[in-house]
Length: 384
Ligand code: PLP
Picture 1 (cartoon, rainbow, N blue to C red):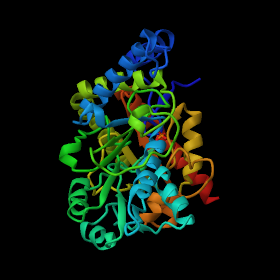
Picture 2: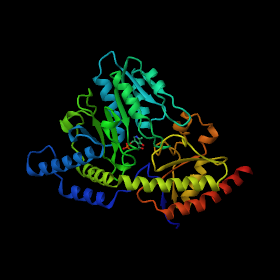
Picture 3: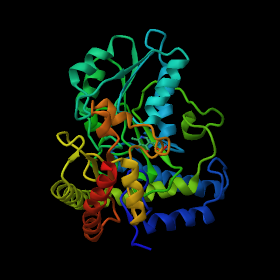
Picture 4: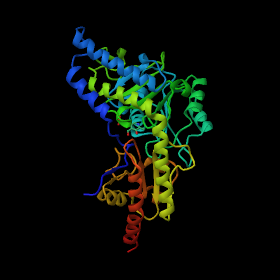
């Protein structure tokens, strides 16, 4: 059995030991219903409030404006559906970009099937949304514009602060899906100037099943999951206390470690990229000219089928990904790389490496030792 190397941190991250311990402790000890008045309930509520404070601190926000959800996907749904439901009849349009995660783009498409006008905005060759194109697309009937902060496949960072300022000047609610940015780059809601921001615990060392939507106070937004009065009427349902506690601990650790970790991961990622580009002729980084989060490398290998490379690397104990985790297995070519205008052959030959907190220099050495040989072998097979 070869040494296992996990380079798929954009799909999900291993929780830190502190997170795992806190989740286990909360599961065992904080079992009361946070809506109950007795001491058991109040203990669970206090645990949730502590987590809310940590999540708010990570993004420079007030705790009262953080709404816990089960997932990033649910937070994205709440943003898009909740704002459109609360908007008046003169503002119904939803504007999203062509490179959004399925959680946003497929939600917009589902809304379009029910009669909501939806605009899907194109991006340039590096996957970046242009300010002028964004402004032109807003029109005067948009209820919400949603532009991700960092792309899950390429790591490309959008000029969210500039776009949010344009939306603000037109009084259009602006949402950003920051699921792939939080824990990797500083994310500060006042500096971004957005109205809504999505994050997800399992992408930065927290457990699955814990996400959040930050909502600027006063933003008109209806609840989507209806029922009890949890989360100040914005998200009904008994809170998943252990997952929320884990998210809080992950947020605290991410804030403390961000500067050192992002510099460390950038060094590892850059070494991986430079090593592959040097050793493998016909390789290229997708989105290379745009600003990117420090942990992601999306690399095209000319004349190689990405799925074959992924499987060959898996046999070597190296876990990578082709595009978004949720669409892999369907063999759908990446909508993100296609939106960047890359030729179909390049889209089909692209692999995502995403480093993270557990990645070491030894891991990168091993990948650099095996990738060129595997690529050479696959190309030789292809030629026959
Ligand atoms: N948004 C982005 C950019 C993502 O990368 C992901 C997960 O891959 C999501 C949203 C969905 O988050 P979750 O897995 O918590 O539903």
